[in-house]
Image (cartoon, rainbow, N blue to C red):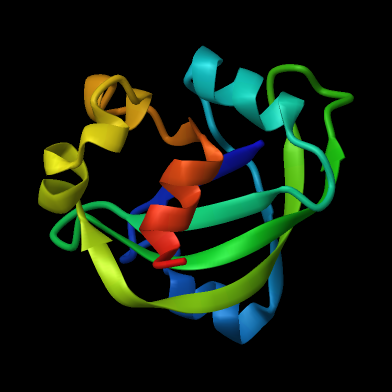
Length: 126
């Protein structure tokens, strides 16, 4: 499985992840998003998406480990991947048929969104 992680770049940006190389992704409160964090497995691929004024997929990362011992606050260690050369904007995502039924479009406030292989590939330009 692949996932998209949303973050407000003024709080924690992809550039911050690049500088730190890895981080713990936690503090998510939406029950559906928390469920997705708990389900993550080491090695799964991630897309980092900036919310706020940017509203675009900007980089990749991968899951290093998952500590789901606290079911309400799982802690997922992630490591930086690469910058997406041509960031995909929310407008482009909404216009693409791959995302017609995606929670990314249907549940705009969901901060952890599962992605199909095809969705991941399109977002990162593969």
